[in-house]
Amino acid sequence: MSEFLQQLLNGLSLGAIYALIALGYTMVYGVLRFINFAHSDVFMVGAFIGYYMGKLVPEGTLWGGLAVLGVAMIGCALLGMTIERLAYRRLRSAPTLNVLITAIGVSLLLEYTGQVFFGAAPRNFPAIFPVRNFQIGGVIIGSNQLIVIAVSVVLMIVLQLIVYRTRIGTAMRAVSLNPKAAVLMGVNNDVVISFTFGLGSALAAAGGILYALNYPSIDPLMGVMPGLKAFVAAILGGIGNIPGAALGGLILGTVETFVSGSQWSTYKDAIAFAILIIILLFRPAGLLGRFTVEKV
Amino acid sequence: MPKPHLALLAALLAAFGVQYFSDRIDPYYLDVLTGIGINVILAVSLNLVNGYTGQFSLGHAGFMSVGAYLSAAVTMLLGPKLFGDDGGTALQQGGLFLAALLAGGLSAALAGLLVGVPSLRLKGDYLALVTLGFGEIIRVIFQNVDALGGALGLNGIPPYTNIFWVLAFVAITVFVVTCLVNSTYGRGFLATHDDEIASEAVGLNTTRYKIVAFVVGAFFAGIAGGLYGHFKQTITPTGFDFTKSIEIVVMVILGGMGNTLGVILAAILLTLLPEVLRPIAEYRMVLYSFLLIVLMLARPQGLFNFKFGKAKA
Image 1 (cartoon, each protein chain N blue to C red):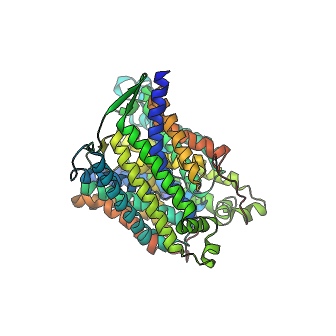
Image 2 (cartoon, rainbow over the protein chains, first blue to last red):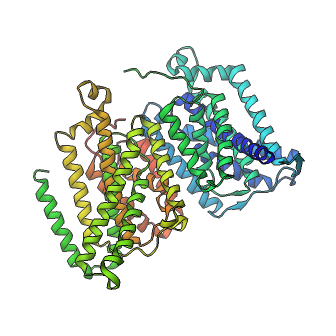
Image 3 (spheres, rainbow over the protein chains, first blue to last red):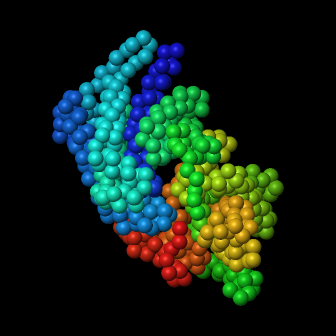
């Protein structure tokens, strides 16, 4: 039983990270209807900003950790907005495929530029937050896991407030529902889309740092797998649906942790894709998504 | 092309010719040429799916790996049994290699059928992701099969690939894809690409076209995999991950989707580029990805595509 609870806890903290990344995918898909492949590399850049910032603050303090987190989120928000401005904006009326390919190009550019600047060899991520382990019953709770869960929950509540309680959030929902009508109602699409990219990228940066805290070896290609899995989580929950992304992330993280704890551990990377295929075949709109009929 | 059969015959004879004089060619150039040939097969076969039929697949490397593993297994298991220790005559080896390649191609085609039937119901981004997912699943499975070397891969594959086989299969791939697309039946691929709903309205079974394109594409990817395995003599599961798939997709896009000649030129260019850029190897991939973005922004119909005024989705 305690082993089960332990795995559940590990799964939820991994799932919370997937959820944070998945939110960025889902929001961008909501307003632009395309898969931002470069999102997983923004996640990587977030972890690297954390790595360099982590050297500037005293190790193992709460305020230092939060400061690093904040700087990385702002840095990645700017990066995300720059990517949108330079690469995607010109393609807004282009066929989906061209945008997809451009996104793959941006992703590769970030990865290989990262390899030139940071080097391809993995680095050790500093322990920027205080580390302590608590034991309740047979379950060991690491302070990093608590930080992951706490930060994710806070960020998701903030996101929910932004999307449902602010003017820009209302505008985001309007663009997501119908971009043309939103323009006619006086919404500035460029600002909204740029904001969405900034918001999503900031969440990815937070995800990157939290991921690096738990798996403290970072390299320029670290974003690929978590990024793909987070995308699967976004589809699982219903793409474009914010609570769905959170739910999908938690489910995926938990399932993956249980699989890696079982005798099938070597198949853990395949599980996410198997889930993706099953969900797309049987419920393509995702768990919380709504079905739409394609019109001619 | 007015007489495709004659062209194929000429190409096969030319392949024989190159093989005959291969002793006098610098081995480095032969290696580069072999690499180019394998990439041309991959790109032309993927072009049938992504270009002509308009179904965006990101799992071509997965099918390549199926062909590579299966054909390597055939030559490594059957070779010693059939020929004993002396390795057999050149003709026997050639026959075995051909059989191995066909086995690899057919198994890849079967994998293509298994993947294609469920996933081709999906469109665009989703199809890209599902094919990517299948490619990764195939890779993870190979990583876990100990009989095929597991994560270490297969070593000691006999070096059967020579310039004749490569050029011959390049010719056959181009011939089959060209004839297929230009046949009466093959117009359906283009129709599926241009407007799926309209094609269905005039009675074309678009799902079947997509699956046929997928299976034929997978078959040649399997052949290319077999050639690759017997050329490098060692294969690992990570060599066929989705970076490889993207590399092939980039060739197709650069050449202009649905334009065989352009795709061939792009495959040649993209195989030569790393060789030429070797002095600045560090920045090679940066340049490569940057070019991809600029290309999509400035010339989305592909570098070598002069036919269409604008690219279609």
